[in-house]
Length: 172
Image 1 (cartoon, rainbow, N blue to C red):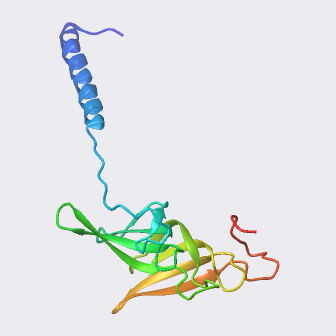
Image 2 (cartoon, rainbow, N blue to C red):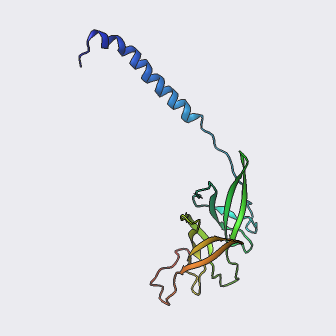
Image 3 (cartoon, helix red, strand yellow):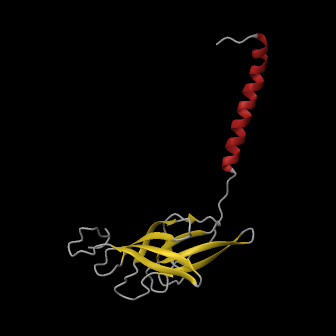
């Protein structure tokens, strides 16, 4: 590559500028910090839930939603919301405790996977256990209403005696 005299005099400046940008980019990445928004209880009987394992979902208002595989009022998992309170505080609310109806847990047990939120604020997700009769897991919907939230099962897996419609993998 050939450069004329004015281009050659600008090369050291361009090289120094490029190295400076790289240095700033690398120090900016190392300056990132993380912060705990909420700490869950470590015991299986905790009402706020235990073992959050799926990614959080954010709604249009900036609230975060997630699930825990255990804990809740029946130790079968929870669906929760984290809302901002002020500039740096987050408040957790339990929206649903799984296995509310007792055994068999028709509303599901051990929710798993990331929740999906639609434009109306409805939440959709899955639970690997529970269901109507064969404990094959469920697909559920949680909808906001004037008194809080309403929970509805959209589909219970293993609804057929031979489970041709699917069943969870962690149970026989």
